[in-house]
Image (cartoon, rainbow, N blue to C red; front, top):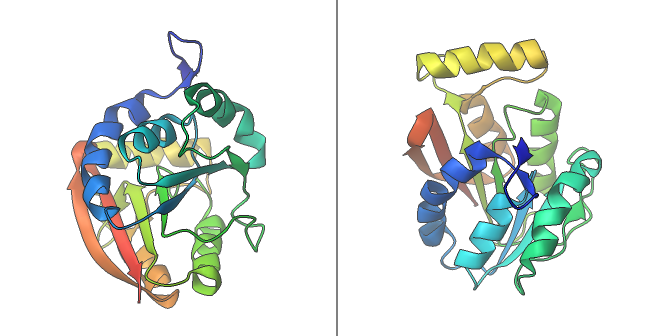
Length: 202
């Protein structure tokens, strides 16, 4: 992550994947009115998606230790439908935010430890209401296998950086979702060997 020309925290991957993800969210969130974003990072997705989807109330959140990265871009955007960022530790349950029509998170499940992934779905199991959706973007393995050589190399890098991180098996994550009362709606192939997974509460 580096500062952009405007001096705001900037992630090139977030810039690259923003357009393809938005193309799917326009359809998947057409009926939604509120979204909570977990692990909003630099705020690039929060700002871009709130601007492009004005019918949504977009709530960005980030771990307390990373709020300094998230705040500047969100404050500079000053969008009416972009809520002030909230500090949220996924493992500190119950969460300090109202349950939305949809949860969205990008490039988080392979960064955090398995216990954090489990905590996310555990909170969904007890707090989700109605036909809420859960949308997750990032790389996944299928049948225990990498989908590309670049993902295998990325996984090696992740483990070297933090042994608790790593690309997750789709089957394991889907089991957590089903146990939390969700059904898989779509598994969408995305650029750069990523996926966009969408579940809906049964």
